[in-house]
Image 1 (cartoon, chains in turn green, brown):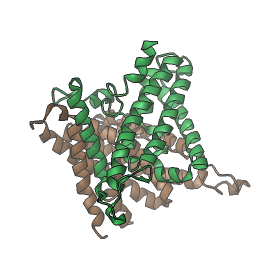
Image 2 (tube, chains in turn purple, cyan):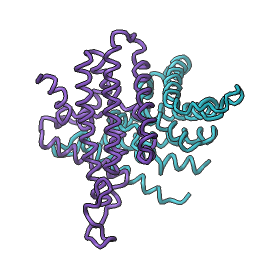
Image 3 (cartoon, rainbow over the protein chains, first blue to last red):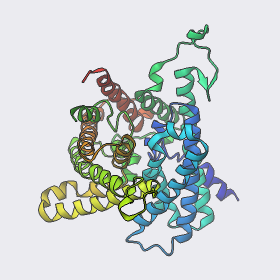
Image 4 (cartoon, helix red, strand yellow):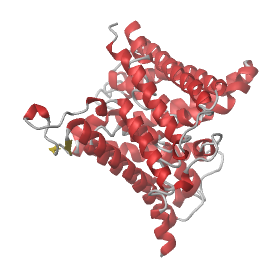
Length: 217
Length: 199
């Protein structure tokens, strides 16, 4: 089914939630100090996104239009609580490192945005595929930024030393800045620049309206 | 108290150090005027919701809060996400109605931003940080005000830079979002310098 496949592949780069739709940026920046937290967050967000899209799509004909936002948020919040409790039970160290950001999946505009824009209007099958695609697109950026920041900031990937630092007799001088907040903004900025230079159709021709504004309206 | 306030405004700035509310931050910062309005709305909502959530947390959710009812071992801590979001949504709704009734001009200025605030992660984030750091109700009020002020300060200065940026000659791929991220990065670098300032 090529149409179903395009639902998964389109959000990977062309309609990427972070670099194109500006959805879910907050957590993408915060949890990418290392590859392990980025992977954990990607898994958590993708599973919440798929489950919430499936449930909301199943209930879409029964949710009254006026209170749909509250219903959606309650469904998402319940799923996030489940994920949060699971994570505290089976990956306690990582859940400490992610601190409040797992809870903040509730207000992650990506989850609510897909629920509102897609799952409320489409049957279950396409909704799950759309959620999976967007979750993977989000994960792609997170993993990329997480690898860059951990590699340049600590010289390791997933805790395994790749570039031997000077302190251990190697040549690599870890860039402390990479572990700090400003680096996350700058790396995502450069990434967006690279993507838009390669796929020039994504570039903003005029300085007026950004896609984010269209989404916000 | 003052150290909580100063830290919340500068070192632990919600937008620039913890990346909270960045979606709104990037989307509504084309003009200083609207950024200022949104900043004011965030200050108001934060100052009310964080202490109210502290009350809810200490009075209902924390382990042992139901001792008076003969249920000392009940721990509703896992419900805090749903409770906080509910409180925030309700308070934003009430705030909207109050402004509409008593301050119509302010309502016109802020009106369209208020619903956005319910799903702004800076607001939920503020309450979650309050819970994680176990602030008392008065500390929570100070923290709420400070973090709101810090967020407002960040978005207003960012919007001011962005207004000027519109006329600059950038490579096509860098226009808009990419430049916004880079500027935010530099702004965040500036704010992180405050981390070295002794209180």
